[in-house]
Length: 455
Ligand SMILES: Cc1cc2nc3c(=O)[nH]c(=O)nc-3n(C[C@H](O)[C@H](O)[C@H](O)COP(=O)(O)OP(=O)(O)OC[C@H]3O[C@@H](n4cnc5c(N)ncnc54)[C@H](O)[C@@H]3O)c2cc1C
Image (cartoon, rainbow, N blue to C red; front, side, top):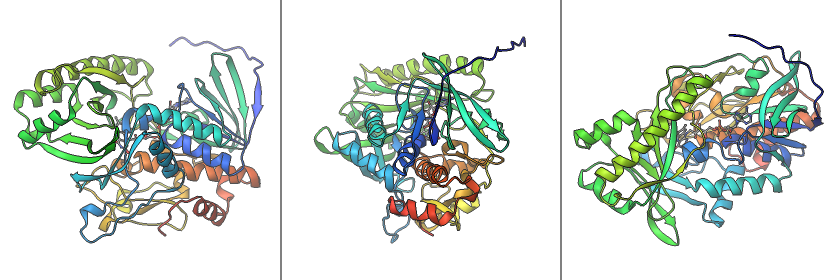
């Protein structure tokens, strides 16, 4: 490939205590936590709004609770609170979430469905960031890291205004893809072990008739009910057991990579129908990703046709929402000081340096955390190997595919975000490196800020 030597250039620079790269699921919480812990915090986000994959892939946040419904006699416990729950409380006040709606069928998978309105989430998260005093730079891409030995000194970023440098004492990589860590020279792998996806919202549909259609075929797998649009006992989550569909329908679903699971909090709106596509190479490959974007848009149109053709009440279905770009379940996996195993997850192991407790596994009911309990994510799991002032959060940690099927879920990413942002701020304040931060100080701060630690 031809190359080009970029001429050196003087660019504007600014300084702060903590830079959080990526205002997604974990990054929003990390930036709020860092700012509230007293750090002058800058959050850099490529898109025009915060939310990340929670609003484009997730939409049903898994899970604030232990899987008590799968274990008779095990009490219900909320195991993630703190800033993530505060965000839910704020959303509840504006009709932006169903709250924690109980799962009535498929209870071995998750006890609750916490569905969020994809659009109100963006607004509420933005408001919370600004109220917390975070400088939010949207439409700004992190393009590089300025490194000196084991330290990152700053990042470079690019926006319509041009290039700039932002210097800080501590950094959180919450980009999902692990861009900042990779730019800083951290070790990583690119497993490419999941399909990419672009979800759609479908208007012009009847969710009640979709439910009747699935019921008639004895094909309801998951059902959760909650409140929205001023009405109680509404369908919040509904998924079909695709094995029970007639062959022709099943084949079409398979060919377009569709999952007939939806969440919603609006009458006659399927807020989330997901189309998958398995890329032949890692989604960090820009040109291959362009092909995938087109393929996913083609599949979205096929999905609408499927609903119009097969599901009564959906004859006038149309695409009401798409994600601006494809979503990934895993881009780069960043090597950190500790790598959680699936055995530790399902055995419910806790560590001396836990930063959160978590109880959901996306392979349930096949794999569940023992006895409806929790496992701990250790502080070490967030420390990017070889770099003294960089934390990794969210989908970029955990190498094992099955363990990652737990730690990558939205609510786990949020909890990691609160811990990473808090720790980054404490390091900045105390002038210490991530590895020298006394765990007890972090623990006390997290507990004071509502985090649940089960150890
Ligand atoms: C299709 C799909 C369905 C899913 N379903 C569920 C579900 O039902 N429930 C559940 O709990 N989980 C679900 N997940 C998993 C979960 O949503 C994600 O793992 C989680 O949201 C990831 O959070 P994160 O903070 O790591 O990254 P993200 O939320 O993706 O945040 C990364 C942010 O960084 C920004 N960014 C990236 N690169 C740069 C850069 N260079 N400069 C600046 N900004 C940058 C992005 O724009 C984004 O806002 C799903 C995932 C997918 C893909």
